Image (tube, rainbow, N blue to C red; front, side, top):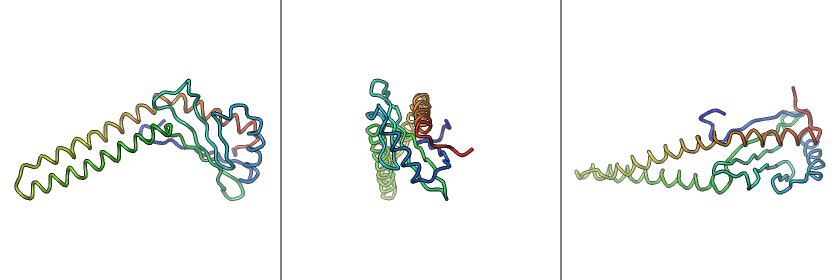
Length: 167
């Protein structure tokens, strides 16, 4: 995993057309036993870590089948669980707004000759934003094993569906 990849992605090029790939995946999905942790909706699917193995930064893998000329590409993306991802973005937005308004307040105070204590709000918000960014990356590294597991499950499913990656 690269340090600066917030939501790691990958592509798998297939020899089949998108329509053939979707049909093969649908047929294989009908025989899948674990439909609680593996969801498939046409050309979009998700793989989830079982709840018993959840950590704070446990990922899920979403993938979609996209056309690429006569063939297709499976585009996969890892992301934290939805509730964690939502919380992180709410924090990012809170810190960004706090920094913006803190710096505006500080500039206004500076322009009228007052002590510009508002800039400290902006500085603290930016430091918190950076800390959350670093924490997210550390958490992602702690869950790298689960990302490999999910990607392996996708590869196993593609073999079951008899889809052929291009060499």
